[in-house]
Image 1 (cartoon, rainbow, N blue to C red):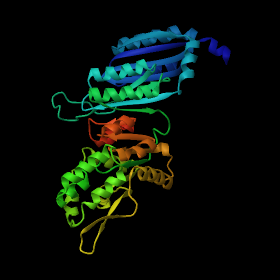
Image 2 (image 1 turned 180 degrees about the horizontal axis):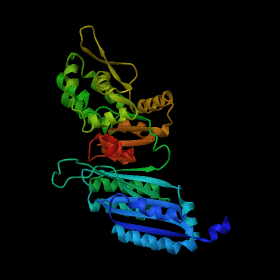
Image 3 (image 1 turned 90 degrees about the horizontal axis):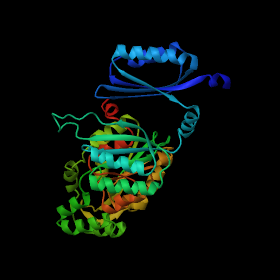
Image 4 (image 1 turned 90 degrees about the vertical axis):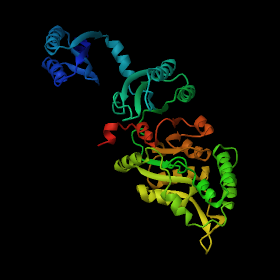
Length: 410
């Protein structure tokens, strides 16, 4: 076998030109005719322009004839072709690196400019990583109708060991804030491809309001409660204490107002699309909220959500809020506990879980999950999360999971 390999040479053929049916079939048919072994193959198609690369090994006695026939075929197909010999030792070094220390960097924006892509690519270069492939996950954007398909996402497949993964994460987070794009940096392992459980915060994540603030406005204590809410979400005060203070201010409010609030809750951009896709592909979905069960149950029924945990308000015999609550408070630590509990029930490895939230009380579950995402989050949350979405809707989560628009629209 070794003797057979000694009589073979490795050749990299590069093909570029107008894409059309049959190019790959024609080239590989010639290679097959001379018993060539395909060692690697890759193709990209940008605006009907083909770029095809094939690395093959062939008996050195046949290589001249193969290249001759490939040149004739290229002329016939009106495509450009070039050849490059590959040293055997170099090839073996390259093979040894495959499958080791791989990462996926996903960047998202309403649009993506050359400067944004260049900035991300510079971080990749500075960290000593190599880009193996670049894939567009979103549909192509119209230049005549720019209001359509207003999102752009690119996925980089990276190979190598970063000089400092923490520094790389920090640099990307800084760029995302300065240049208005979102990003996710994940290890490219089997867990990334097999996420099964996703847990959402509710208020200011699935919906664009804080339900306790809505209740407070109905009770005439809106300003007081809103100020406490904002301080709690920024992490300036303990969530449990702030929760007790705010609930106490709701004493005497008629529960009938909840129905009107629930039916008019502003659903966050992208939630309908996100939920439909997650359900279609079999994800288990949970709401883990520091808000209230009434509103969580409303969303649970609306989207067919599997689990819902939130806080229950106590109601007296006259249908009025007492200013108290029932059971344990669902705070940040409780959310993290529930994430782990649901994962155990569903027999899902913690690395296969996703958590999405915006406030300081979401940080524990975001940190515990295999993929933790800060969504339009408060500064403290963004600073501590590894992934963030700030420029588009909640369906941006799908791109961090590797979905392409073509899958989503099936």
